[in-house]
Length: 376
Ligand code: GN1
Ligand code: MG
Image (cartoon, rainbow, N blue to C red; front, side, top):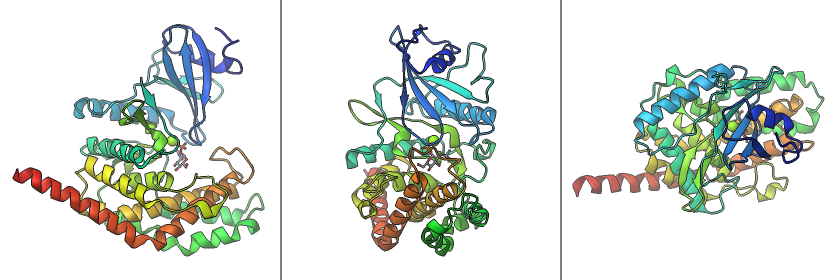
């Protein structure tokens, strides 16, 4: 083991060697992406590259179920996507387990680095964002016949907005860190919008939207793009693939990627919805996922709003509870994140009609192209 090159990462290097990697570990670096798990790039002396991940068990208590979901999804996609959908393949440990338990409460897994791939933290152009939409849309399309009910709920009630509100209320009542006074304005903002934020869930409960196997965490950094063509290569981070709504996947991607500012921007006047990006994503998602029902398409704008509000509430709840869930790099980081989400949601409220028109127009173009395809 070359701990000199792996300075500061000796434990990770040791853990990587618990998997049948090709050669000795030469270097390790941390990839700062995501608020839950820790991710490392491992390179061996033979030049092979791997991604090593520490799974956060506070968030994912049942790692076994999570890995089983993953292999069920991978097997299904391999069989049904005719090679169109690249998949990451987790490697078993040398002892034949799907993850390595370090005996200290840590669970680790490893997969081969996808060659020639890049992972963007932000779309650099509308085209990048369109490509990410194609990635998530194709993923959704490839899973259209997957029996969602066979997936374990890796995080209970993950996008149950009503339940998010009730956890939020509990955090307000407990006010365990004495932070409530400081966030009164944000609390009121969220409570005033409860009915509107929960409309997507109402549609689900009324049986108006199909429950599917969805990704549920569709930030642009969860799709790999080809380094040269910048086309979508592979959807990653399948930890939260669970029964859900197509509007969750659409909405989460919009709240993160179609904002004009970062998720933790402090200058709120910089935060708005970028309608060009909204259109680009809508187009890519609808083109790649022609199996969506009319009702699902009509729920997309609501999906964007619900996911933005829900995420803001989750950040605020975590702030009130003392930042236990999302990793933070600075004081009030979760509060800053909450504020951007609420600002974005407010902007969506004032641009609702424009959003709906964009969805309508893009959907119309796709239907027209399909009709033309049929008649030619
Ligand atoms: C978390 O770890 P990451 O960044 O992929 C969270 C998402 C949130 C997101 C907010 C399991 O995702 O639900 O939308 O942060 N993942 C989990 O940026 O809670
Ligand atoms: Mg994630």
